[in-house]
Structures are given as structure tokens and as C-alpha cells.
Image (cartoon, rainbow, N blue to C red; front, top):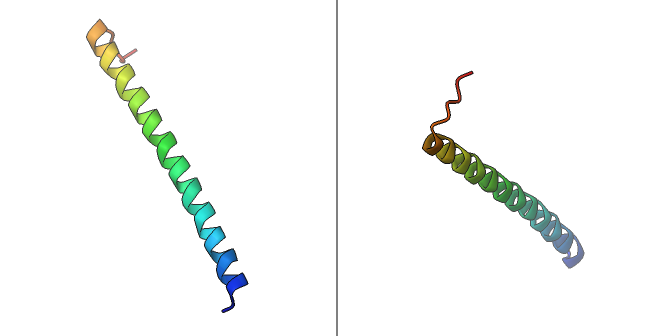
Length: 50
């Protein structure tokens, strides 16, 4: 393996790692939003059953 192929492989793995981090951050934000919404609905006395 020469340096050029090593750099392209490193760049590819870095890109995949960045997108995994973005997806994890988005999932954490969504979970926090849903938890916050459920907590305030419970505090207001609303019921999810329709």
C-alpha cells in the first residue's frame, strides 16, 4: 500500500464516521424532544389515548 491509497482510505473512513456522528446527534435531539414533550403532556394532564 502506498501513501495515496492509505490517504483515500483514511478520508473514506473519516467521512463515514462523521455521518454516523451526525445521525447519532440527530437521534439524540429527537429523543430529547420526544421525552420533553411527553413530560410536559403528563404535567398538563393530557392523555395520549384517543
